[in-house]
Image (cartoon, rainbow, N blue to C red; front, side, top):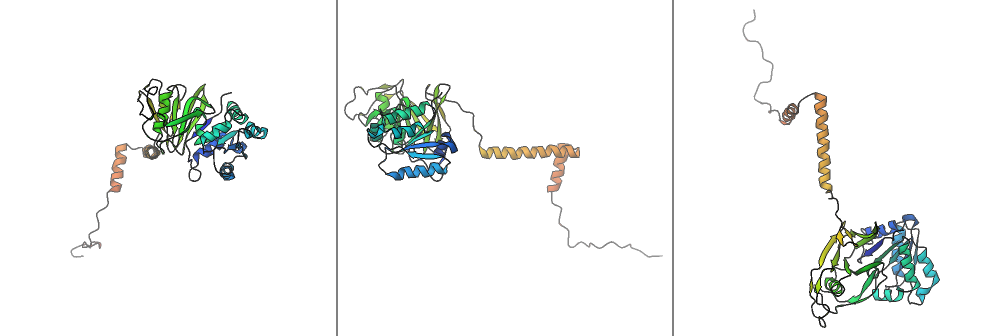
Length: 333
């Protein structure tokens, strides 16, 4: 059985006006049969964070929504929490502090249950911190900035749902290019994935490859350092890093990227809706013209002349001209 879908959400997903990403999560989880487990461990908020997602997922048709919130590694051994995850068709990890989430969940029965859910085909989604923890290596914390610098971020172990990758979130909005590039410079075998807000990288198994499709209003940035040249091994303290030869992909909505082969998947060109509407109108006009020709047994040239005559207005009547009938002239004998 192929692994279940992963939804890597960059944070701040739209919950009101156009909640496309969250609706997609519920649909993939089974729609009306969806049994969703929400893991809010990363959040500093209380029950209200679960209440928000409970209301949304129920509104979108989910059959049930249950909170799974271990606050310590000891609680992450609770059989009741493990059971809820084992029965879930969809798991959603909220935002917050990803280091808190990983330090409590990874390597525990709750963490193992998330991995089992993914392996049996359930959907595993996460926003912000819940996105970062899905990769094998995780950004624990760090500063923003466009230039990669030594020690600008700290890396921790993630759940490993995506092997050989490191995920960062709020990517463009918080200018996190530099810190993701720093990690790739230090570990060029890792694929750097940066996800913008209200944007999702949907990763699915396609013929044994991990293929990512982008959903949402932003973009997913992929940094491939497989052939790069870097001085990360010798740079001191907070010095800027050399990073040359990095392959840089910016993937807006609708883009498809093969994470296994690290290549863009070509897509059929889309049709602009306005162009399609104009083409449909032209097609209708052409069909009507054909019918007119067939009905009148006339040539197109004759029909064009008739149309021209119809469009030519008649000259206005001359008011000074006597419109009365003419009378015969001369004597009547």
